[in-house]
Length: 194
Length: 156
Image (cartoon, rainbow over all chains, first blue to last red; front, side, top):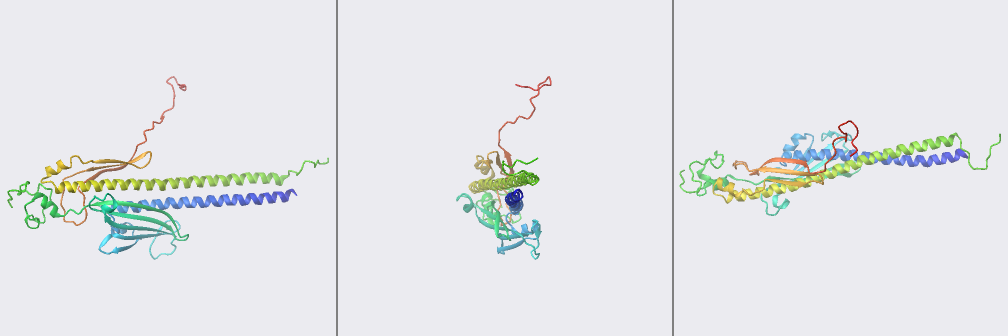
């Protein structure tokens, strides 16, 4: 009688303990995956910012990455995809054993659409998403943006330095300002000596 | 000697073994789950902190966009470099953006002399001189043992 009670109780305890260990294993795996995902996301995001969103330049840092540009003339608009195995090691495009994918969507937008409507210039925005290809779930995603600046044409500088002068004709193309390097021009725009 | 069986079940070796195994298994299981949960909580904090940093970064980039717009407008409305520097004299050169309760992203910019280029790529009229996470927590921690000069513990 005692042995039967012991076996029955032990069965219940064993089931509970197996569930505990299984939950611990699942939680631990999730935690490890999040850590890896964030490490890759941050690395990609900072590399992308340093490359000013140029996916071709970014690919030189991640040679295994697959880049698909929306427009071949605009390297800032497109998608960069990385594939990783179950140990979070990067894989070449043709290699089997893909377990995770990291997708970076990049787009160049007007700064007014990303920040204040009165802001001038351009910005780049991106989303990095890390997916588990086997479970078909998203592990983590990250959004970031970077202000690029404004397009400052030479005309802007010519108009500044030589306000009464046709900017296309009066200053040789190889002159690099600072503004003081327009020695024959009165800074007030009068008495043009060129 | 005859056993007294009036008081229910007997406690034998198997029952003792069961108690020991049950305690051991439940303890290890609970410890394992507690450790994994702590790791998961840390990972979640890391994820939240990363999102907070990039939210602060977004604010900093907005500050840079606003600064650049002001610089371009000042440049276009100035008649000389001296006039330009006078226009931008009041522009803020630093911003501190809270990341969380204890940290802030500090960004500082400088306004060097504008230089034209032949590049069609967007450029900026400012230079970032500082982009750093700094601690804003002003809590004062006790950093020494309360030992008195005569060698005993100071009970003050």
